Each structure stands twice: as structure tokens, then as C-alpha cells.
Image 1 (cartoon, rainbow, N blue to C red):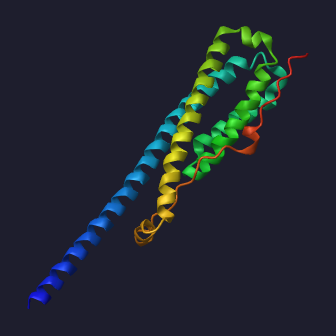
Image 2: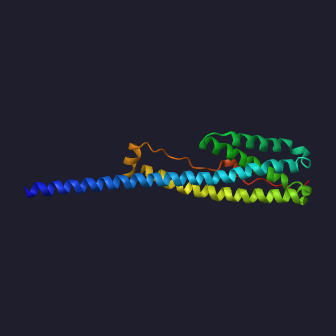
Image 3: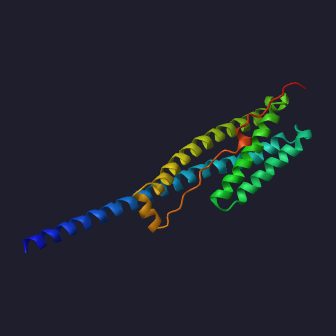
Length: 189
């Protein structure tokens, strides 16, 4: 009788340990997923700030950049696409295109000394540069959290819980190759 009682208690203790373990892993996955969503929200705040700055910048430089209308149009089109993107993956792709277009705009900006002398344009460029730096930092933070989350989804034994509850990987916010290239600035006219 005592042996049966000891086995019953042992099985009960093991079940309790398994339930606590299961709950701990589930909660850690939820926590990392929510941190990833929060990190994306922080990127989104900075992206919206960038979207708000772009029309002001484009309107300020339009008159000066008569021969660069194609560059301005690409920035405007990329911004529109970024604003209309519905899901995170599409938004990331659209934002990467916008980043590339802004890089070309900044390179063109360097070719116009009268633009650099205009205080309004200089202020807008500084705000845009500051925002780009904040986006880069937020992107790095987001990718760090998402990497931790995605790794946990794949590592045993958390992958068992992740599969049971159909947790899905979150996408990394990667910089496209064209944005990695340093824009060429030609100051010779």
C-alpha cells in the first residue's frame, strides 16, 4: 500500500513539474512574441515620422531640383507604397525601397550647394537624418528580439510547445543590398 502511495505521489509530482514547465515555456514564447510586436511598433513610430517629413522635404527642394524630378518622384512613389502596405512583410519591403530612394535623394542633395545653404531644407535633412538613425536603432532592437523569439521556436524543448500552439516565426527587418551601398556623391559640376 505504501509503495502504491509513493508511486502515486511521484507521478503527481512529475505531472505538476511538466505542467509548470509547459506553462513557463508557453509564457516565455508569448513574452518574446509581444516584445517583437512592441519593437515593430517602435519602428512604425519612426517610419511614420519619416513619412511625415518626406512631403515637407520634397516640397522644399522641388524648385531647386528641376533636373532631378525622377528622383523626387521615386521618393514620393516609395512613400505611397510604404503607407499603403498592409502586413509587416510588405511594409518591410516597401520601407526598404523608400530607404533606397531616400539614399539617392540625399546623394542628389549633396550636388546642390544652394539647397545646403537653405536653412529650411537643412533643418528637414537633419530631422530626416536623425529619424533614419532612430529607425536603424529600432530595426536593430527589433531584429535582436525577433532572433531570440525565432531561435526559441526552433530549440528543443520549446519547439514542442511552439508546434502545439502554432507559433510562427516573425520576419527580420533586413536592409536591402542597394541600401547597403554607399551613394556616390559627385561635387564636381
